[in-house]
Image 1: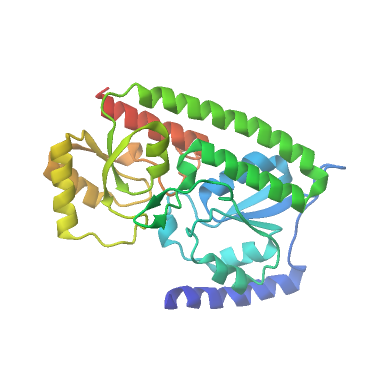
Image 2: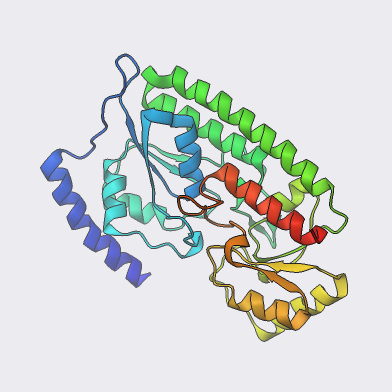
Length: 307
């Protein structure tokens, strides 16, 4: 916490200097009659991708959390504070994922709308805590995209028709993705899954998989793993005949590799690692939400089917 406040305090000076020099927000102009281009800040890579899909060329989107960065270990930088200060709209995942956001908003001086994209999502619970990884179910992604469309239309009514058309097209893509994933997972005889941390609960519930366990047994990747946790997971893997342990692209694979080795099963890592808390960098198999879900599904199905 002390480190975070030091970073935030340093960033305030940069934000104030920028605001004084250019008047703060700098939304550009869109096509004549279509409204201005909105400056949109999204907290996560997934929310940023939804905003780009819905906003199209009427938005410039900045993602605070960068590709392949663990969402649970994010610290705002002075550049992030500057982006927030200039924003027309700030979009968050919600469900407690961004514990740092209130401090960031306050330090930046931002006074515009902060939109919780989780509105309307039925939350999964585990150990009395709501699961923030809501995007892992494409049906939830549809609700998040719809919340974003409403926020953008309120911020720039002149572009509302364009936002609605983009949402309609993107919703169709999400529906096709959902059906595609369901068909692939339904083909599996073995649906037992072990992942790095509890980031895939919504995916598991939607497509009928069985989550045997996770290397880090919580939603939060900063939780510490005990020797007993490791032994218990190794025993469960052996007892349930799990085929593989899946690592995540935003997490170091060492512990997962150790557990898989002790259990005598393969570990799925490297380019095949799943996209859990974050999308991947440009040019990767996970640089958009649609691609990330397809990558995850293809990796899970191929490794659990033995193909």
